[in-house]
Image (cartoon, rainbow, N blue to C red; front, side, top):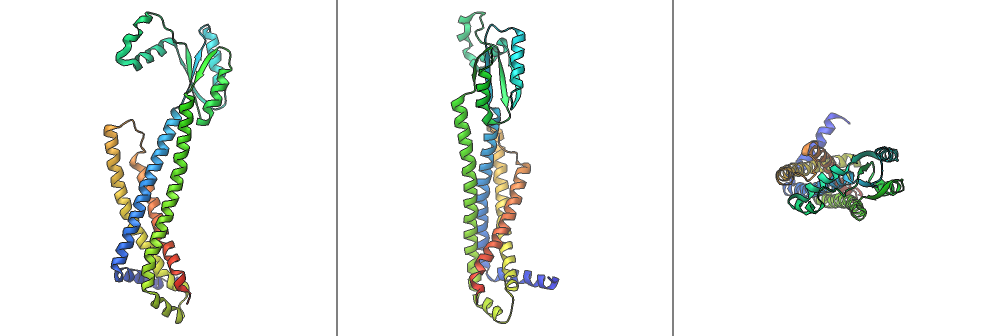
Length: 295
């Protein structure tokens, strides 16, 4: 394609945008709103997925040993657990440490333990972490079969509810993002269709004088890309400002909440929205032109 031809296409696209100023503003606004909603839901879903992953990674198995085990036997049990497939970390928790943790959890109610005197009823045990959340239950069941194990706990009901919730969040997020992308494509293609409809006679004349389909399409395609990019740029700016404000507020009052850091997260989301905006604009133009190219 010659440089002069490219210049002509770009010039025609800009002239069309100026000529249809109100419709161009409406198109950019539509793209901006669609991309902003899509970006907000994408940020929400990815953060929920991140939180779910953090919670899943924190799930561990508590292993309680029988009181009559010697130090050697406890070490042997620890070695057996370490060799199980999927186990990434095994930490020994002695009776004294278990009691210290229990007192910390009680806080100001430590007086409840006064009746025990110097007796420590808590058992020795291990804290076990695995590489995959779905390995928690089978690993706990395998450890329970070892000699010297009193019991294993991992909050089975809570863990199973957590895993089902995170799976639902991920699937819902994917479906929602697909739905919003299709909705944005539908809105943009119909908005650009108005511009194409206003110039249908011009397109028909160009077809009659021998212009090729692609010669007619290119200015509209460039126009669609400009509209898509323009709207996406506005959405990206608003999204970055909103997420920056959100993370600042969360870090001030809810520092324990595991949000994804702003950088490079927002930069990646912005790049995706810009590409998606340009693609949707181009595709919307192509869809809108299809019926008017049949002369």
